Structures are given as structure tokens and as C-alpha cells.
Amino acid sequence: SPVDEAFVTLATTDGYCMGATVVAQSLRRHGTSRRIVVMISPGVSDESRCALQQVFDEVVRVDVLDSGDRAGLARLGRPELGVTFTKLHAWTLMRYRKCVFLDADTLVLQNVDELFDREELSAAPDPGWPDCFNTGVFVYRPSLDTHARLLEHAQRHGSFDGGDQGLLNAFFSDWAVSDINRHLPFVYNLSASTVYTYLPAFQRYGHDARIVHFLGPLKPWLSGSGRQRRDAGVERFVALWWKEFLQHRAPAPP
Ligand code: UDP
Ligand code: MN
Image 1 (cartoon, rainbow, N blue to C red):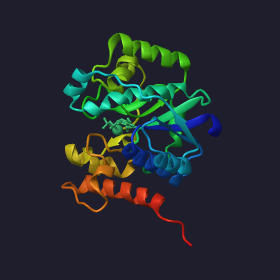
Image 2 (image 1 turned 120 degrees about the vertical axis):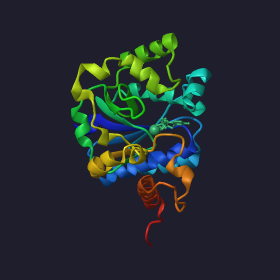
Image 3 (image 1 turned 90 degrees about the horizontal axis):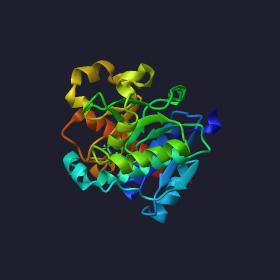
Image 4 (image 1 turned 180 degrees about the vertical axis):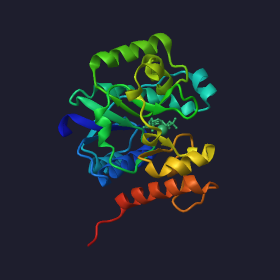
């Protein structure tokens, strides 16, 4: 039901707070009936926190968890992603029965409340290794027990990519084979880069995109609202992202 189900995102820096704002705004634009929650760490400025309080139903403070796995993160080429272990706090949001986690670098293009019909752990394939799920969008059930077991798994085995995705794939290791209902269609986590990695598929199915994910180091908030990128397809999504962001920032009419 609407009150015990929530969309959850995470921001540990002011840049990711810009992304989180867009997550909340785009969910509201498409009329979600669920609660919208953001987890923030102490590194977020007061100004950003106040801005988030305007658009989220709940702002939850959490501590930063870092995998500290420099070697794994170097292999991944993303030294900044150790802090994505902070995502594990999502399992502690016990006032909700079921949640959908969305990365702060996602943009919702349609109502996606039907995701709450799915069970833990539902997610879409990762475009880089489709037998792994991508952890930018996933359905889960808060549980202190699961949370403790995830931390224990992290302590014992680490994460094969140094970030949350390696850990969660190792933990929910039967995802690829156990239950096709836990495979979200790719349109729920469409990596913006698919526009050029498989253009014909994008042209065939892209119109049904529900959630775009700006996966990779080049985030929309780093690109500037006016600047053109080389790729026209991705550029369209970046423009949509900025439209949503600036909508929120627009001053109220007198
Ligand atoms: N994140 C964060 N601060 C950081 C890095 C990541 O808050 O410094 C959160 C944020 O919600 C982000 C998610 O962790 O969307 C995963 O990181 P990112 O989206 O950069 O990874 P990618 O999707 O590019 O693999
Ligand atoms: Mn992401």
C-alpha cells in the first residue's frame, strides 16, 4: 500500500544531491502514490539538505560506509565508488515493507509504481555483464536481518568490483537463474549509453523507456545545461534531466 512502500535514493555529496532532486521531482511528475525517501551522509551541506527537504517525504541521515577496496575500485576504474556501500543502509528503513531503490543518477520518464508488484531482489541486467544485475534500480524488502547478513558478507568476502554492485550480486547470487520475474525489463534501467552501444534496439524499444540511468563517470550535473555532447541520443536525455532540475529551481511566480 502507498504508506508502507517507498522509493529510496542516496546522496553523499552535493553533486549527487542535484541528482536526487531530479529523482524525486520526476517521480512526482509521473504521479507516484508511494513515499519518496533520500538517505544523506554528513558530507551533504545544509543548503543541499534543505533543498532535498522540499521534494522528499523523508530525509534520513546515515553514516558513510566505504568498502575501502582500492584494488577492486582501481580495476573498475571508479575510485569514488567505495562509498556506494552506504547503499546498504537502505535495508534498515524498517518503517517500509517494500522499497524500490533508485540511484541518484536516474531520471523517471513514466509512472513506475507497478515495480512494487515485484519481489526482492528484482533488478535489470547490467549492460556490461548481463548475468549480473545493475544496482541502479532494484526492488527490495527492508530487513535488519538481511542488512546484518550483507555487512557480514562484505566483511568476509569484500566486493568483486569494490562497490555495492559486486557485493549485492554475490549475495543475491541466484538472480540470473532463479526466477524470471526478478528480471526487470531493461526499460526500467536504461543506461543512457545504450543509445550508441545498440542503436537499433534503442530505436525499436527506446520509446518505452521508463527510467534512464546515467551510468558511468559523466553525470548530467557535471555537464552543464547548455553544452552539447557528441552523441545526440544521450544528449536528449541529458536535456530532459536539466529540464527537470531547472523546473525545480525555478522561482515561484509572484
Ligand atoms: N553515490 C553517492 N556519492 C558518491 C558516489 C555514489 O551518493 O560519491 C550514490 C548515488 O546514489 C549514486 C550511487 O551511489 O547514484 C551509485 O553511484 P554511481 O551512480 O556514480 O555509479 P554508476 O551507476 O555510475 O555505476
Ligand atoms: Mn548510477
